[in-house]
Length: 550
Image 1 (cartoon, helix red, strand yellow):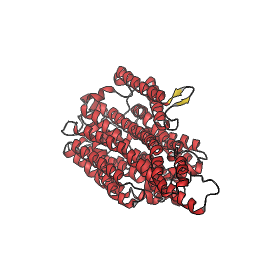
Image 2 (image 1 turned 90 degrees about the vertical axis):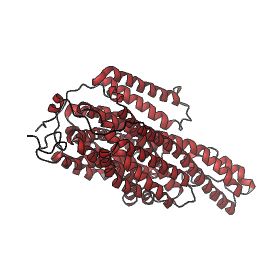
Image 3 (image 1 turned 135 degrees about the horizontal axis):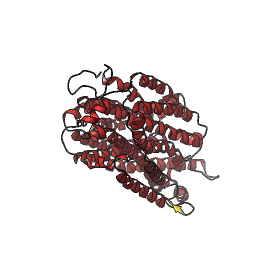
């Protein structure tokens, strides 16, 4: 029997007398783990470089492998939710994610860690579409903004809190515990899922194998090209194949994927007719933009605070604490506000605050300045992130009827994660590229403090330094026979060169994030006004959603 409630507030499915709010703990706990793991590894990057004795670019794949499998598989796992039911797929994702977390912690090589992180991404991809789909299908329209507000607060808090949690675990227990901590959380989420998540009706769907192949291969080639480009000097990789040819091939495959989806119609992994809805299209642009910036900026900031400023992982992570707290407070209010006024204004405000915060960070980053003055821009960053996530999710599915809301949620999450993958790869590529210019340039200036006999040798030593000098003079080898006072002066000058060169490179890299955030703000302003409630399903479809399997 259907749950009785006032019009407009009744659940869209039979929960056997329970409130729809009972489904949120399991969904939010699983989603929290997913989002934490998009940023928690950043704080461990210096430790991983040293422990595994590998390059910065190689360690970058610990993040990119996770983000890549996560984003590429979202379209497939969204369809699996339709075929087998979101509850079953969500639980399967929890199991995969939890076991993969254990494998990450047990990794004895960087290759094993990257593979385990890719498996974690599979688990995340299985879970994510189901969280948004269940909220969309269970909550009535008048409560959906508030529910998505809580969901959005989890995303904002987890993304920013990841570095803090990672810093604490690395200093107190070791890097493996940033993965082991997921195990008890995953077990609790499984218990809650079995207890509270409903069995929603399944829909017969076909799997688009060609679409899976095109999207997966295209994204793999694109991200590999962006992230590894600097390592190969943007030239040949092997067998005469260049980085630019790899990037171009990836782009062509993604265009072919889009054309194939148009041909498939409603049986496509990504129904292209969804993008005919103006707000849906622009919300997807905004989702990709915010993920690009949020995932991308933490990589250079974390390196700067630990390698240049010399903060411990915990202290480096504390810089993001105000943003995490404020984001968690703002997000539920932003979600409720998007039920009352046009959500486009809330989202545009959030993007504006994010752009101001990142530009502020870029202006204030300096090797000689106190890192604690970055707390103020991080607080503004929290206001922005809290204002964007849930209203943007509401906009993405507003105006879509119940037959297309699930597909819309899957497409939105896919594009959001693709933005994160490209952001991570692009920021790494730009940072390493700028380091190759800014550190040698800073070395020229720092050499003026040295005796003239050593200046040219000093400049030559830094000519191709890039990121290889880490956080100080570890990469600088001095020949024998140099007087002790000269050695001291040279190492002090090297410290100055690396510090100022790195700070300049980070500031320049953040300009890219600001530009992307401004694109997100413009996309919000171009949206149509009006409410964000979903349209009711057609009668037959509504009836088919009214009963829940036992």
